View 1: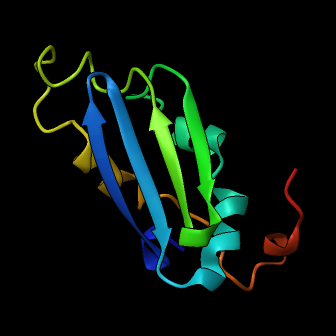
View 2: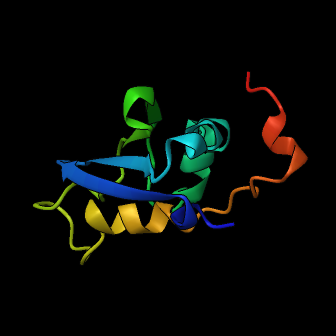
View 3: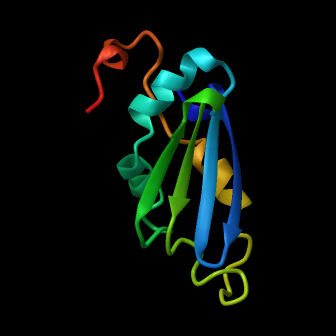
Length: 112
């Protein structure tokens, strides 16, 4: 299933950093977000865009994860010639990640 089926996203940018929040529509889906949306997975998803570190911050009370992508905006809005490659477009792109269905037995696997 695509991430967009269980979550929405918001994003912003500052300089060469993109900040993307992924928020579960239903709080019951938050553990799936925690299990499958790791910083490593998000970095791999944006491998052609984010040259720097990807940090993940958990916000369980909101049912959300926040990702900070460093060196992700080709130098930033004022330094880049890239059109429409900033902040908000990345929030749409993250929702195309594929995650296991709720019924998948791997969903029950503990995270490290």
